[in-house]
Amino acid sequence: MFRRREPVPFAFLAEADKFRGNVAPPPRERSSAGQIAGRWLLGLTLVAGLVGSLVIGMPALSTPSSTPTQQSQASQGH
Image 1 (cartoon, rainbow, N blue to C red):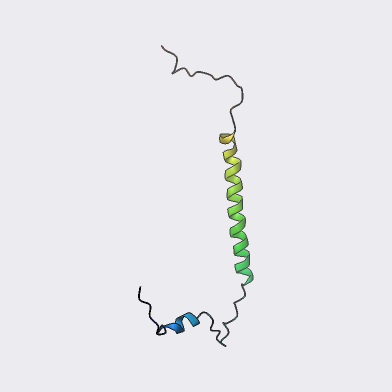
Image 2 (tube, helix red, strand yellow):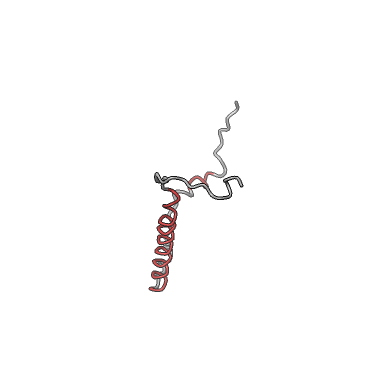
């Protein structure tokens, strides 16, 4: 294979990662009390929904106890 000996014309792109500008980004805006309360409320709502669905779904996940099964009137022949 033939290899080039001249420098890559776009070598400055490789150096772009090392460049540090002297311009600082603007400071982050502080969240207001309403925004913080809204985030907490949303988090609590999600957690309460997950816990509630688990509580409601537990009977369906539990194994049936040893109660005798009853046959309905429709399954018995006339």
